[in-house]
Length: 99
Picture 1: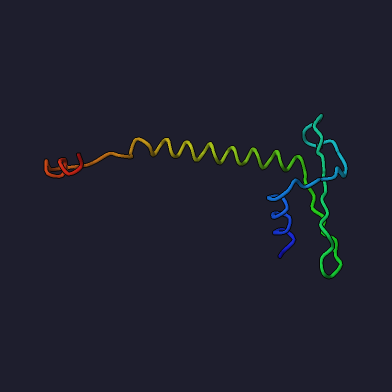
Picture 2: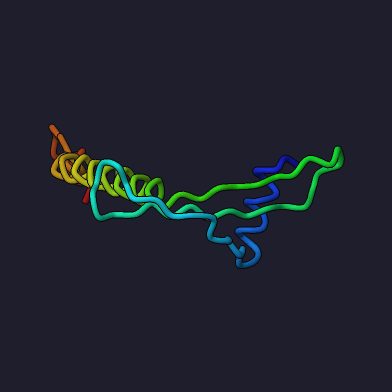
């Protein structure tokens, strides 16, 4: 199992305890801080440490991107909605079958 899959499995099963590593002020957005957290898995078979890093600013960016994609998908669905259930029936026989 890869390291990423191991972390995903842990995230799905239990509450992973992220440890606060450090905090720095955002260089682009004054007054906001980027908080970095880490989580370390057990060393792998070769003895290498596996450390995962979580960034609060990346989390916010990902959330904004996700919301933007959802908004775009909803607007596309709304544009598609008027064309749904629009029958183009030419004969009375076709109309009778559809009713």
